Each structure stands twice: as C-alpha cells, then as structure tokens.
Amino acid sequence: MASTQSAVEAQEFRASVGGGVVEAVVNGKKELLSLSIKPEAVDPEDVEMLQDLVVSAVNEALRQADETMTNSMQKLTGGLNLGALGL
Image 1 (cartoon, rainbow, N blue to C red):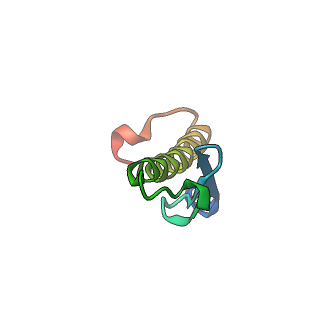
Image 2 (cartoon, one colour; image 1 turned 60 degrees about the horizontal axis):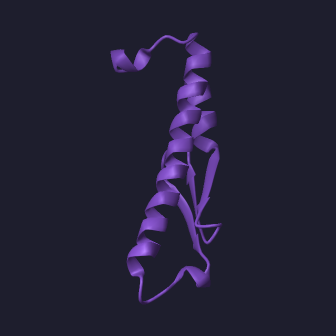
Image 3 (tube, helix red, strand yellow; image 1 turned 45 degrees about the vertical axis):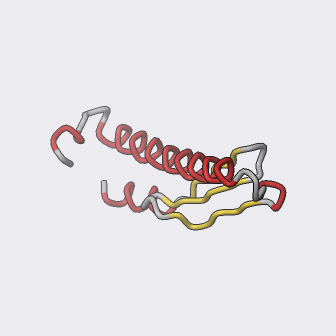
C-alpha cells in the first residue's frame, strides 16, 4: 500500500482553466508545484476574475490528485473503504 501511495505522490496533476490562460500543477502530496498565468489573463480592472481562475485551476488539479489516490487505493484494497477506519 505504501508503494502505491508513493507512486501517486510522485505524479504530477495539471489543470488549466479560462481557455488555458491559467494552469496549475500539483503533485500527489497536494503541493502546488507551479502556476502559470498568461499575460492576457491579467486585467488590472478585473483582478477578481484572475483570482477566481487561479483558485479554480488549483482546486481542479487537487481534485485530480485526490481522485487518482482514491482510485489507486480502491484497486489495491478491492474497494474496501479504509478511509472510514482512518487508514
């Protein structure tokens, strides 16, 4: 189980939003590795939109990491819900 967890933690998960103007990359440990913002996404008159795009990209990348970890563990445990046991 530890080797499966380590393998997922080493993976990178990438999400882009806004037609690719903002991209976030996280690893399976849920650490933000990089954040790319294209110049056309920066509008001094609408900072809130850029903030929303950043949050959306990071959250989507984290969701992908969570989903991959969950699926990997379910395959390993035969679908047992060990999360309910705190494992």
